[in-house]
Amino acid sequence: MGFLVLVVLVLALVFVLKAVRMVPQGYEWTVERFGKYTNTLDPGLHFLFPVMQSVGRKINMMEQVLDVPSQDVITKDNAVVKVDGVVFFQVLDAAKAAYEVAQLEVAILNLVMTNIRTAIGSLDLDESLSKRDEINAKVLVAVDAATHPWGVKVNRIELKDIQPPRDLVDSMARQMKAEREKRANILEAEGLRQAAILKAEGEKQSAILSAEGQREAAFRAAEARERSAEAEAKATELVSTAIAQGNVQAINYFVAQKYIEAFKSLAEAPNQKFVMLPMESSGVLGSLAGIAELAKESLGRQQAAIANRASYSVPPGPQGG
Image (cartoon, rainbow, N blue to C red; front, side):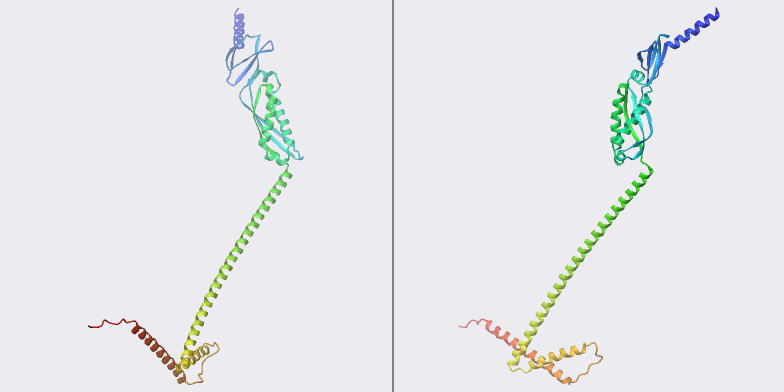
């Protein structure tokens, strides 16, 4: 009797455990009746009828991540690259994910790897390395459309790494180095060209300013010579007028001037250590005296002329009655 009670209690406990089900958050369980799908259990507490009903599949409804293993892919220009990536997906329909496809994760991985090969195979190596976003978008659209009947939403597909062969990497490095050296040489040549242009412009401006300075100096020297010549002509005219009037001192002035100029040139000669005077000093003094006399006479005539002009300009005084 006691054994029978114990068996009943064990059966009752098993019945309760089979009947009461608690689905955790983030999951959905499918219910099968005699092996056939009937409904889906949401997160929370549920009751099943043992023997007739049972839990079929426990589906994770949260977003999941799958690593895409590395694979060799041939590009359009026959370059072999190694590509790997990552896939983010989420189950939206637990029943479809459980019964429409076997091994859901394996199926998604195969779809992603196949579409990656298709996308990269239609591009050159340079395009494969530079258009990663375009490849991601293209693969995402294809895989999401293929997994839609399975009740799955593929949110993102990212290529983690694209590795060309080692020899291609070395060739690309040499090409990049050559390109950088080319740009450096071009920039250096441009700098030298600009420097030469600036230097030529500076020399041109310097030559122009120098020519203008020489022209100004020549103009001023010519003006000075012109004024000196005018003064010389005026002096010669005055001396000639004095000689014409019979003034002998004018001749002494002219001779003394030329004598002094000749003596100055003789004294300034760089190869002369001393100067000998082959003429009398009294002659020079007499010429100088003549110059003084000529200056006095010229001054006297100027004063007389001023006095005459003053006498003519005085008005007559009033007459007395």
